[in-house]
Image 1: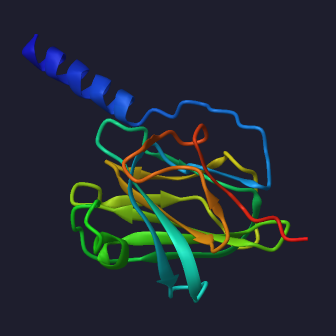
Image 2: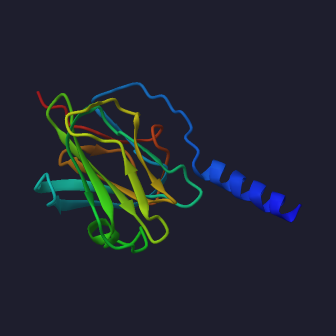
Length: 186
């Protein structure tokens, strides 16, 4: 009887943790949706030196153990870069986690030619990143990008000139919360 209760409890927790609620969004090339559920822990201008090699606006979303851990494409476009990087496992909300932790980086180029980098970052408990991005694949805003098992963090690197629609400390929902509006060049 005790083993049955323990087994059911573990099954219930895993079902809750690995849930993937379907959230439909209207595709809009100007809008950047949150790629994950969580809390904004960083919002700053940085130099992105992995692929873009330009100053960007970095938005960091920390996912707690209670958040949905599915990551979604924040914009539509074509995958230009997709690379896994082994690394450390610092606590995900620490600033150094973005640089030193295990992560997977994906660059999406919009139909207008703007590039957005999405970085899935493993944390102290999370040690498994799943990413579905393949170079050359056309993505649709809101589709599943991947999953970080047992949570962590997602960093977005947006072009300068992007109008930010959230604040540090704000809670966001993947595919529900508008993070930013891209500057639509003429």
